[in-house]
Length: 414
Image 1 (cartoon, rainbow, N blue to C red):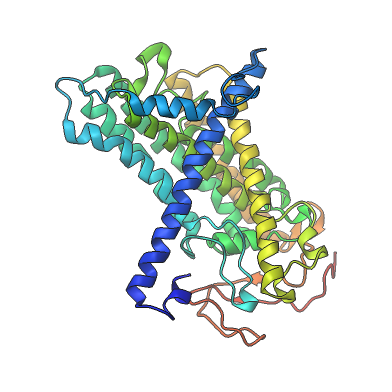
Image 2 (image 1 turned 90 degrees about the vertical axis):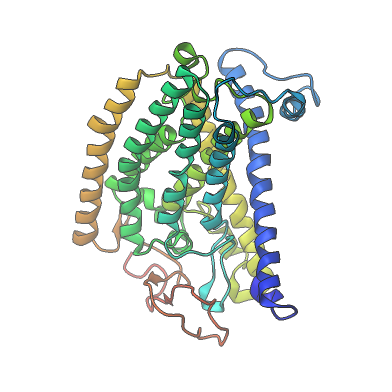
């Protein structure tokens, strides 16, 4: 977008406008998804507990219940405890929300057809996107620590310390579960990771070998803990710590913590979908069958990307729904059990899965559960390198990784 606008205005103005557009889109995605997921959590928890959930505001399904609660929070008085650090107390919720929102910068919502010079649908295409997303999501804990430290409350401080210990602990197995997907794809570029899984669902990395299959479930467990969801929500633990790190918050600032939580839930679910579940590719290559690919023109390519966007969001919503389901099904663990789960189970399992995936890739290159990986001809082996001109004559997007087209025909050797 910025490159296109720079043809008609100063470059600095073009990049500023493009950045503002991306920020507005991401902000709306996080805010609207939080509204939807809060409503969804109430309905799912109601069904699990043999209730109906919201049924009055906005029709019999209570569609507008979350919006009504948001308006109520806006009218609440913004209180600050006596003895609290004013600046840090007010800053903490925004730090958490900013870290959650910033993780979306590098997440592509549709792939890039590098052979025709098209860019992926991402705010910023980063060739180390996996590293960036995990690093930024880890910054959310600083908002929690600031909230607990600045509230002048022992309950808030206890909750903040629990969150710090929990997040730092679970980042280790979380990172190790991501490495097998990076190892198989040969890149930390999320766009290339997604395009590597094009074709049938048998090409999804969750089905690549037994080790990546287990690594996905370990990742999902660690991701649930890293976003402070039950049964790992010891930072709140209302049965022990009143409300944990946000005990002293009310009104709009309180709502920012929960928007950050739901935003992070969607972010880790999107990352799981891209790494293991085929990204924007469905279980069947419907877009290829309908001719919605780059080879058939830019309009067809964008229509295919839109279909991929729907695919990716559906997978992420299913992931968030499973997190909600787990919250209302399993009892909360004790803090010692949370740390034990990480150090005695998740970390060793992640290490073994990483080693196993490495051995599988060495012994059976190109093979998965179902034999040889069967990818369409337009999907390519991946490597990092300087930008080169595509064969079609269109320039490759500046800074994009190079794609090497496989010469073998589709399904050869399968």
